[in-house]
Length: 198
Ligand SMILES: Cc1cc2nc3c(=O)[nH]c(=O)nc-3n(C[C@H](O)[C@H](O)[C@H](O)COP(=O)(O)O)c2cc1C
Image (cartoon, rainbow, N blue to C red; front, side, top):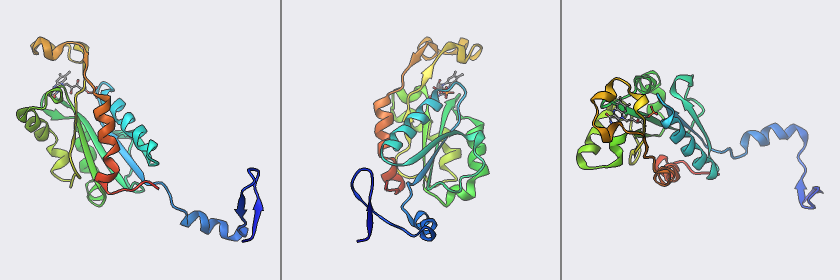
């Protein structure tokens, strides 16, 4: 084989410069996954960041972005949509994201996760409430595999008025995020989306 010695003393093949753009075009690229999140108090953003980091460890080109900053989902091989739940509903920004990109989202594999204090105790009733809240995402899209249901973070400052009407255990300061559960779910995402790392 024709080759030159690289600085690390391994043989490197020589490509005529005219073929380099072709080689770049055909070289395997890392699959790209978008984690599009809505948030009011950053809890869900931090979860989306942890999911992106976990995917990157698997060789996936993952990007966590607030739903409002996404102009297009073209170029992504899969999309994950995450929202916190407030008063039994997901944030309107998450609904708007799904409505805005519905066509393109239906053409690519999608996964979803919800964040809420009810996810601390996933009884059948709480699961049903979370599933109901996520219907604006799961209804129009073919969500792959199990939806992530992650306990969030609570602070009375999140709800200065409504907080007065919450039970003490619902309104107290608490970070109930289970990072192991979040990372385990994220590690299973490529399989769920049918995307293989290169
Ligand atoms: C006013 C208020 C209402 C909430 N309602 C719900 C709810 O209906 N179900 C639930 O599971 N969690 C509920 N939560 C908890 C939030 O989902 C939790 O604080 C979440 O971590 C917030 O995420 P964010 O920081 O990304 O906005 C509520 C929190 C507040 C402050």
